[in-house]
Image 1 (cartoon, protein in one colour):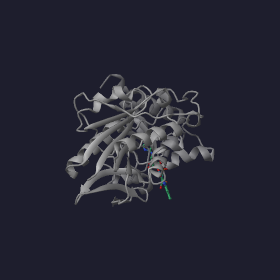
Image 2: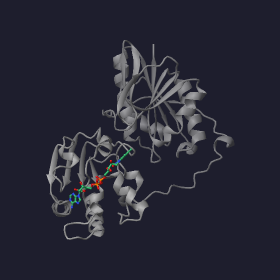
Image 3: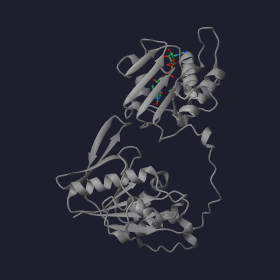
Length: 345
Ligand SMILES: Cc1cc2nc3c(=O)[nH]c(=O)nc-3n(C[C@H](O)[C@H](O)[C@H](O)COP(=O)(O)OP(=O)(O)OC[C@H]3O[C@@H](n4cnc5c(N)ncnc54)[C@H](O)[C@@H]3O)c2cc1C
């Protein structure tokens, strides 16, 4: 019989990230599908005990925590030691963890120490004929595969945004504290602080409801024969500020900077969506001045509601790739949209 552990970590502020609730939801569903499997939750990090009530009602019967000053921030050596100790204490055969940056760099090493296996970028977990199955995409999201594994423990890192988050009432539960000795060899790396862009400069927002994709058209000559990159920058940043949308880009636009063309200063390769870029999971997407070519649109695989603004009625979006195509000048459209947003509409 499988023993399932949902292994999550708190953020430095002591709260569980959304991806932790998604892992909790997936783990709870899996236990239901498997029948009599035991479900435990392990929480590592700052204020781990205080986070237990927020998942106490998800169906788990054991709660294991590992916390302390050395576990507030992400550090491979201490995180791996704590995660390993929690996994051993749980005696779990299947460990479901969110694929946050912190766990992504830690849990492969933990799987090795436990003599187990790990799979990353998993997008679905289920049970078939009493066996645990994991689903993930291959070859840049073109093929979906379903995996079984015999060796245990099996650590499954679940991609954020792929499964519904568990949502339930705050409960009560008694947590078992898992002691981990974090000696000098595990704390040699010191965390001096975190340098992050100010919130308003951070354009990639995985939790946003909308993905706004800018294409190279923003930097091309317009009807008056001139390039209007400054206007484009003002319009796009104004829209992002007002809508809190996440910013994506076509490859052509981010490549322009490397070729010495007029560019949008805030755009980097991190924003690129597509075959050689990212595959975001926002529920809605709006593309403007982007042609909608196949290598770009494959990055929209998980975006269900799609709209685009393009001057060209024969652009790629018109060929079944968007639900709605506005054949219009994106400069005019976004000026109007920003004005409406400023009025609170
Ligand atoms: C192996 C390979 C991998 C690739 N990987 C990726 C990838 O990961 N991501 C990616 O994006 N691309 C990728 N590409 C490139 C892709 O094929 C396209 O070249 C790219 O997406 C085009 O970018 P674009 O639509 O922004 O630019 P363009 O093709 O230059 O399109 C600009 C669009 O802007 C419109 N436009 C101009 N002015 C306005 C205006 N005022 N209002 C409205 N519309 C306007 C034009 O009508 C045009 O449709 C890849 C290509 C290859 C070969």
